[in-house]
Image (cartoon, rainbow, N blue to C red; front, top):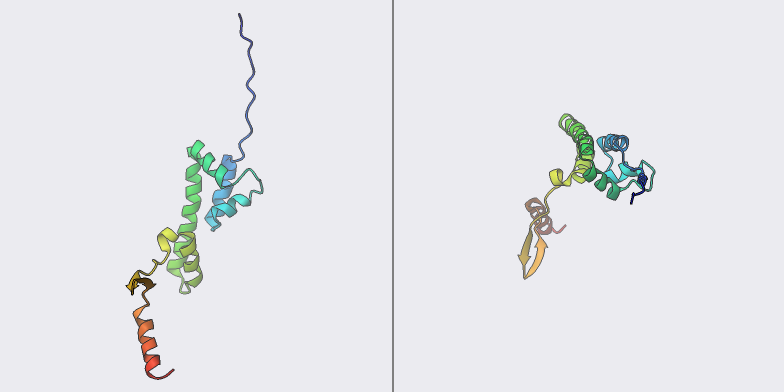
Length: 135
């Protein structure tokens, strides 16, 4: 008995292609979050879930994305090193890369079996001075 040859129909065309990855990497390189960089593609099938799957299925995409993140961090740190007004850039770095730049949380201190956060010494000293002078 002879088997009939069946033609394989191709599956759906992937929504995340190398061209998409390159565009997203450029946006991330300018400082957009991944979520916003993907949203700029304006396609419902391009989101963080499909992005993760595409990077797992196509390891060749990852260097483009990582380069975008690296370019942003490189430019930001160059500006940080050269600038005398650091407030805005520090704010962005702390939020965009909290694992590298966020300030650590103050350590809690036990007071009467209750956790409270320790106040900086200069704040405590200033409060004492004000209370002595009746302010």
